[in-house]
Length: 387
Ligand SMILES: [Zn+2]
Image 1 (cartoon, rainbow, N blue to C red):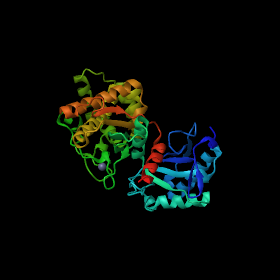
Image 2: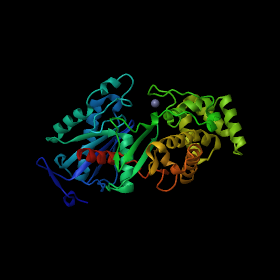
Image 3: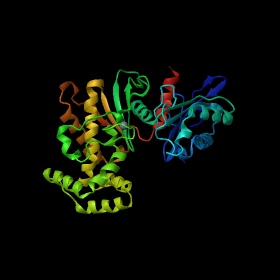
Image 4: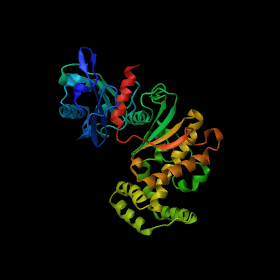
């Protein structure tokens, strides 16, 4: 591939042929590039640099410039050939790319540094480096991931469709896509992790010791408090107590599932060092060893995701409910197990025939997008500029 073969556009006197996408994460920043239609990936491997978001927006801006420079060097391209730069951020953003609330950037001590127009800062720095103004667009990372998934399924076709997308990780992000475009409401629609959901009666026993968890947003009973790594870190401390072990063992016995005391001993050891370590291993044991104790804990997520979808179907009646994020990395059999639990919970909670989950109607499925939020950002920037 050479850049000369790509279609070009003249924008403000510049002949542009590529778009840059940046995925601003907590541990690393990923950079990718596409042609103008965003359907051709120009780099075989993404450029990755360590994230400096903990050190504030100035350092982050320098790091983004360094990453884009690396992309341009790899492609043999010039700054002036870039049509636009789109960046995902782990915070709510408006439809026109303004950060609305600083939620997951920086440390508690320096978070205030981020309370500034980051898009303007980046645009100014880009102009200094490029010698010309290049549009910069910021968007929420979960929205970008949902947008990329939609593009992989439907391309640029504006066919009638409604999808609900969630991404599982440290928190639970989400978005609603209508006819291929992220729905914002008047600002922050799609913050699905903060939907307040009571535990369905049939699952009350498993959550009996943890009936009213507090969320980082200040609310209570947000889905995110149960279906996220943050929730699991809280739960694992209870699960490894004598009381927790007894409850889980009883539930497993009642279902004829095996309780392996060795797993619990290993998790307790890790938990003594740091609860986080034990929580990370829960997923590994649930996936690689099909351990029933660990799977029971991850079923917390699956059940509440099923409950979330069951609550949303009467509001949106979507074609698709899509699960993205870290869980998509599990092995095939583990993905089947997890999706099975989500579907069963959905079916138990929403019995209305119109909302039955089947192909094309409230269908529950895994995301097709892997690690391409950066391209989702490009697509969102394109849609925003088309107005
Ligand atoms: Zn919340």
